[in-house]
Amino acid sequence: QVQLVESGGGLVQPGGSLRLSCAASGRIFSIFYMRWYRQAPGNEREWVAQISNGGTTSYSDSVKGRFTISRDTAKNTMYLQMNSLKPEDTGLYYCNALTSGVPGPVDYWGQGTQVTVSS
Image 1 (cartoon, rainbow, N blue to C red):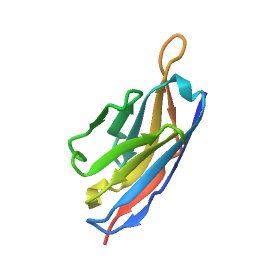
Image 2 (cartoon, rainbow, N blue to C red):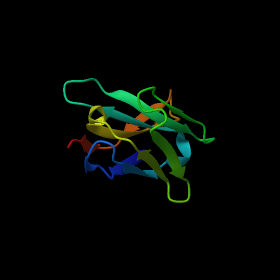
Image 3 (cartoon, one colour):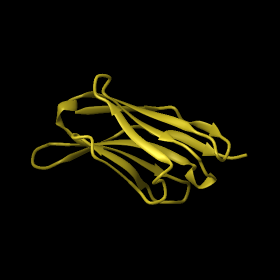
């Protein structure tokens, strides 16, 4: 199993920045991708960004150019640097890990960290 713990959420004004962290433990060698998702009240959970084992990154169009996903393999931690935040970025941000498994890949989720962008 893989355990994921997010941190770094909070209240920020529009135009501000936050950095989220996701600390992974357990069978981290089995992780293919690590991802950030978010969910606003009344909305479905949406994919935000991902980083592969090889370091390849990709972003949703809504955050491209403003958010940066990265990882520190020595600390088993993934980050999401969020700049130029907008009110529509408000939501509960979840860390996700896609891992190898039998008979197929397995998803693990953190508990989420709240981001609120408001003046």
